[in-house]
Length: 459
Image 1 (cartoon, rainbow, N blue to C red):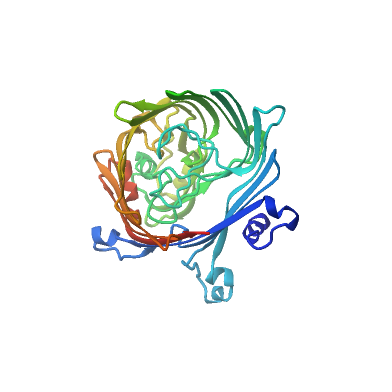
Image 2: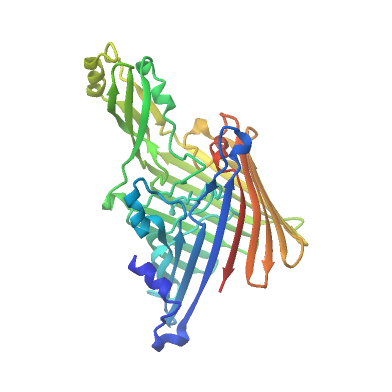
């Protein structure tokens, strides 16, 4: 918290001795989103959605004490208008009535020319982006998913990490370590990223039981040496093509159902129970290949392939928990065998994305084929998706951007009109629509459909 406040304050308090070596700036943005779910389901009311970007005030600072050292920090102060108050006395607390949060975007120290001109080291809170494509990546695993805005499907969170970069000629090598695990940020509205409990509660063992409340309990890995995530990437850059091979070993940043569920409440007269389901962040290893080049007709092309080696996860019910139901008369006997639902079978699977890019005058178009959505983590669940992004520069001050991704059974479509005002502020009018059948992974995004107005300026 202190570091974040210091970065924000750096706009106004810069060390005079290094004034000529310090650069700083900031940004302000606001976004208003009105849900359109009510147009699809008449029984739902339209409501405003908060993706934690309703009002943002950010600041960045960069200093170069010497040619071999750089320090950079960036943080954002965010105002959240949705007040979470249950009791009248809650309204006496300013942090409830006027809630804010601070998010560190970057806080790094760069050391250039360590043990030779070819080696650099970066320490601190940072993003380490891997992947040669545009937007959708399958080899980018060091940074957890940022799902605060569920429609920004390839956004990442910065993490505290150590990054070593060796570069010589056409060859570069990266080695990264993330000592403390950071989970993905999950959406506050519009999308459920946690696993469904239907498969477990539909087990014959619960045939005569009505499951009432289900509580999802998260087991975050401890800050221990065995939980350090590591990654390495070797890249070759030539005039004709870029190639890279990478490896990652760590934990999945999105939780998965794993462990023994607990019965937390009983209503024996109606055969009802409450459950608590454990969620874990299973270990995973990934080997990635990347390539990017240019095809005839000034087409940019790329491909990323990731071979994923996941851990097996499953939800179970302990015998003692079921025996408690027998003692209460809720069920006649403990089922044999005990119910088990495999949430992740542990079999190796392959994800890939291939893409084409074309710029013609004022039109920039990208088409991609994705195999395996980020929330699909079993071979049997992987689906194919087509994704298109087209950016039209209508005038020097007006840009229209259209995006869509679909698997045939579900679609997410977004459109935005960007207007430049006064050469300093950008106004955005947009909408997002998501729909799909029960068989489509994209159906989970239906609640994020909305119309949008926003503004941003940098200074």
